[in-house]
Length: 147
Image (tube, rainbow, N blue to C red):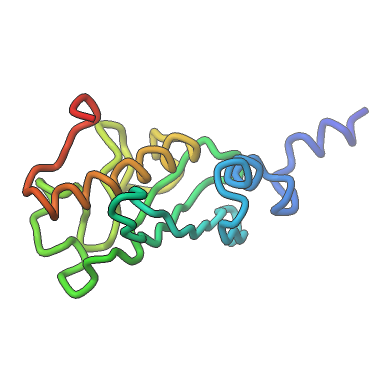
């Protein structure tokens, strides 16, 4: 009985048994997922839309339980520009580090303080890809209410 409880409390699950791995496999079974200490690192390629076909390489860092995550744009189709597309952070929501502004909750400090789950982080980051492409084309960064 106590061994069962110890196993539940222990944070030494293999990668494939972490919540973060399971969530990402459901979102993208082709994503590259690794375990680095207590963090799960994920890389995926995401196409912003069928019409444009712009490919973004996204990076996600998550706690093993998937309760805290951050998103980074590792590569974008406008790579000949500065990492943030040559536009200011306040307009593109992309920091020079590649960190993507996910919203009003904490998301750029220590990982365990992020207010976003891995699931929400991936969904918001994918929306950001499309919004960034729209901004490059139109000069206007669409908000979710505009979509």
